[in-house]
Length: 328
Ligand SMILES: NCc1[nH]cc(CCC(=O)O)c1CC(=O)O
Ligand SMILES: [Zn+2]
Ligand SMILES: [Zn+2]
Image (cartoon, rainbow, N blue to C red; front, side):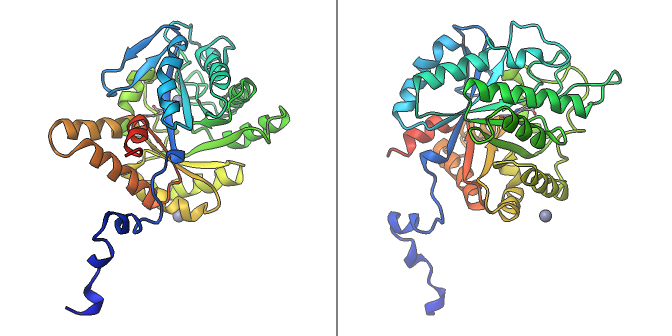
């Protein structure tokens, strides 16, 4: 055989195989999405989202203590109000006694080294279930939406969030949130992570079950990106960099690896997050349950593909499993 034909010499040993990765998955790269509901004693199973629960504030410590011991470094909180009165502008989003703000305070108190990010959106709190404020004809009214979202983000920062992450997709919200953080005295104390390239995906179903945030009419196609829209995704990323985003995110992850790869070239000096969303997670589980592959193998393969594409931070419901698997 010719000298230039030989590659296997470089990866015949487990250690030399590990050297073939530009970057390896580490615990620091994982951010764990957690659902917090307004029944303080809840620990509700979510049928379509394997192993995840809606947690009440009183159950958080019992749930998180073991994960912190295993090396959990960061979480992203999603509020799931089941009892509150929802309205047109999502008033309960930043209720000072609501689940998200209560959880921020509690977690800051319990775990000084835990990095706490908060998803910022209105859909969990609006009567219509859309991510912004609507006109009477049901279309999004950008200006009041952005103003309200910036107000919520600032209130999460004031409560102690290390990071606010708007997932609403309204035009101009990154600039408005950055402005609100600066004017409120949090410009240098709170990270702004933008769901920049968030696509209108079929993979959000289990999340909407978990969060009760499906729109009551219509869909989100006028504010989330069309699946085929590479150019718009590029423009959204560049806009958000220009408006002051500290971290760029692509969501979902696996069907959008090309966008992750493109984002890493468009914003090479920013951390790049990707969100392995609820439907992707459920898909990996469903395949494993059907005997198509082994869960652990496929969980690693999906996340390694995201890292290979350029992601430096991964939001995934597999975080508890990875904390175990990375131990071995
Ligand atoms: N703004 C809502 C929001 N924030 C995060 C997700 C999806 C997360 C997941 O599927 O895991 C969604 C769903 C949506 O746009 O309907
Ligand atoms: Zn939303
Ligand atoms: Zn481009």
